[in-house]
Length: 110
Image 1 (cartoon, rainbow, N blue to C red):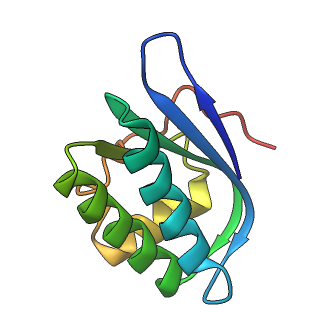
Image 2 (image 1 turned 30 degrees about the horizontal axis):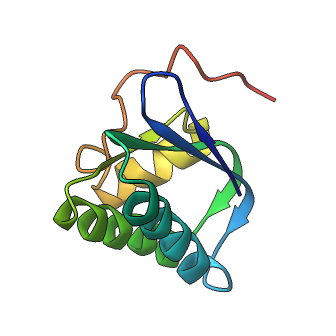
Image 3 (image 1 turned 120 degrees about the vertical axis):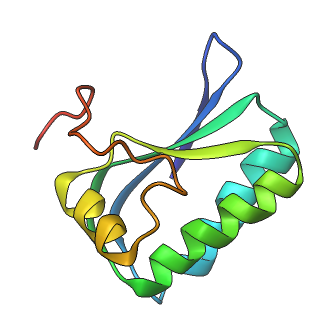
């Protein structure tokens, strides 16, 4: 995971690889830390290079979004890969996490 501060004041947390029960808690902690340490206007979680996402990862994203929201930071999923988008839609949390219903124009397929 890498964190970048954008010129508009938002923060982007880029994630790659597989997210499952073995590292979902770390993802949640990283998102919450980026939100609470930096206090950005918004925190975009870039999942464009995520190749696998299980239910523990979905739960971690929702928990991080709620914890960060309680601190006044809006967390949204950005550039989600098609697989991630589908998993979040199946779980019924895509709207909560700000995932667009149409494919993200900024997503680059790899």
